[in-house]
Image: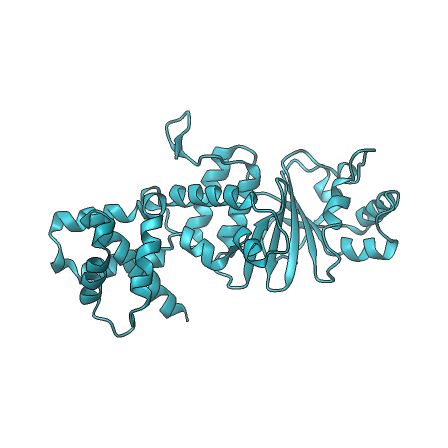
Length: 325
C-alpha cells in the first residue's frame, strides 16, 4: 500500500483499466460461471458460462466518429473490438468516460446487460447505419456481419473518472454494497492484492497450454479468496468467540488483528495450512479440537497468534464453502 498526497491509503499500481477490471470483479465475484482475464493493456474478456464479452477500455474522450476513425497504421477502435470473436453469442463493449460526445443523440440506455447492471448504452439505429458505412471501408466485415455484431455491441460509461482517488472511493462503496468487508483497510488490502494478481496474470501469454491459460484467468473462487466477504468476517468472529476459553483476552485481540494481515502478509502460510483443514469433516468437527490439532501440525510455520488467526480463517472459509453447497 502507498500513501497519497492527502495522507489516505491508496492502491499501489492502480490505473483506469484496473479500476474497470476491479468493478467487474466486485459486481460478479459471486457468479460461479465467471471467468475473467486481461488479453492486453486495453482488452478484457469476461465469460459468464459459454457467453463471452469482449471489453475494450478507453480512458479518452470518445465520440461515434472517433470510434470509427481509422489510419493507415491502425484499425478503428470499433473494428478492433468487433474482430475479437465470431461467436454467435459474443458481446462487445467499449468502456469509457462520461465525456462521450452526444450520448443522448447517438446512444440509448439499455437493460441488456449481465456484467455492469447500469451505465450501459446501445447504438441507436442511425448510429449503427453510420458505423456500418464507415466500417465497410475497412474491408474487414460483410454488411450482414456488421449488422449482427452491432446489435450485440455496447458502450459502458464508467461511474468514475480517471481520477484514481475517485475510482478507489467508488469501488470501496461497491464492495460494501456487495457484502465485501472493507473495515480496517481490508478493502484496500483486497484491491492491492487484485491489482498485484492482474499484473502477474497479464504476463501469461495465451496459447495451447490449457493449464497455463487457466492461470491467466480469474474465476469466482479466485476472487472470493481475494475479497474477504462480510460473511467470512462474521464467521471468523463467531469461531473465535466459540473457542474464547482457549485464549486470554489479549491473545484474542492479537488474533483478531492478525486476521487483517492474512491476505497481504500470510497468504503463503494459509496455502500451507488449508490442506490440514480440508481433510477434516468440518460438518461434524469439534472446532476447538480441530484448531488445536491443526496448530500442532503447523506450529513451525510462525508465531502463535498469527498461526491461530490463519487456522481460524481457513476453518471459516471451509464452513462458508459447505454452507453454500
